[in-house]
Length: 264
Image 1 (cartoon, rainbow, N blue to C red):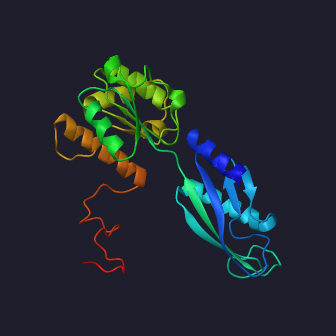
Image 2 (cartoon, one colour):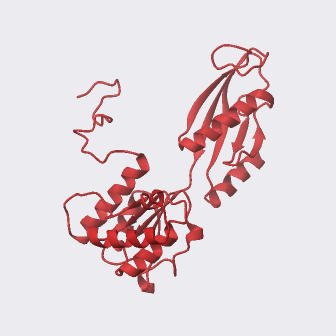
Image 3 (cartoon, rainbow, N blue to C red):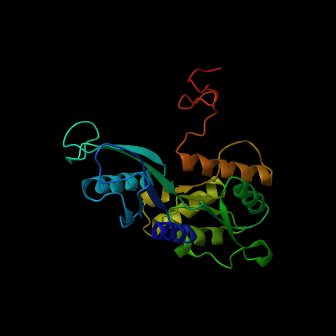
């Protein structure tokens, strides 16, 4: 148990995603016991055990699927050769495991800490982002320079400098990373010119399509804080794979439903 908790703490300190599977219920014969734990990393390596054999392999695979989806889940296994949830064992028991996903805090990397970058950083912290700001003015920055090596699949990149040349330079670097979101401020004309520069240098349409530019959702506001809000709204929309439509017209969601599923 101590080894598992130590490994979990180390992963959290390194901001690495992991899943912790815990056996929460056992009925009948089973090699697993309530409380058995298995820590699963994205590369498939594990710490601990939940009984070994086919059951442990199934729980490991379920934990990897939960990591990919980014959501915790409850999983049931039947220790039989056939039937619902069967894992191909002869014990005959039933096992339920809770698979808890630990994801690092998402990072918002802002290149440009000016009149839009500052309110964007404040709002992003409120909604749960770890914010890093790069700016030529040290008093506005948390980092001295843009480091593509620090960008992961948990990172969103926003390019809002005061110069189109630095925006393009940073964009070229960002496109070499696995960033979950890349957005660049600018008019349609500026964006079109920069995209043509990228195409001329052999950067493919699939890469260019990753860039949200002009950045943000069209909320109508033109003040710096309103533009920052539109940028953050688009980032959250992309994070959750939603449409960005008003709740009243988006049939995929029912925000005012009662717990029993009925609408008020």
